[in-house]
Length: 123
Image (tube, rainbow, N blue to C red; front, side):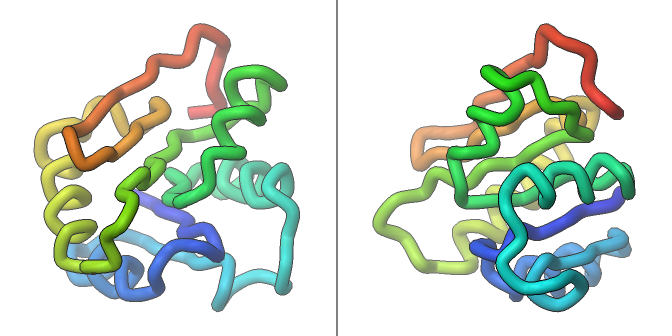
């Protein structure tokens, strides 16, 4: 699977995904500094990558403005900086939701929610 990590996502998640043999790029390392969200989303689509982010603004782009995408995983884990928690959630998604990675997935302290896209995605 191919992933793109937004600038606000911990870089250690890239190493974690790479250790699981996924193809990973990060905004921080692989692209120019301070790209706007719509450009980040367009890069993910162009390269057919699932976007990992902590930024709810991508929901606005996808659900209200109908931007295409190849899947988004949004971390909504307030008050936790424990990378191990994100590792566990990500591993769970990769094993139990692998057929939903093209959707908009939200990870909260209470669980995983998959928001299906009613418009055509780029996946």
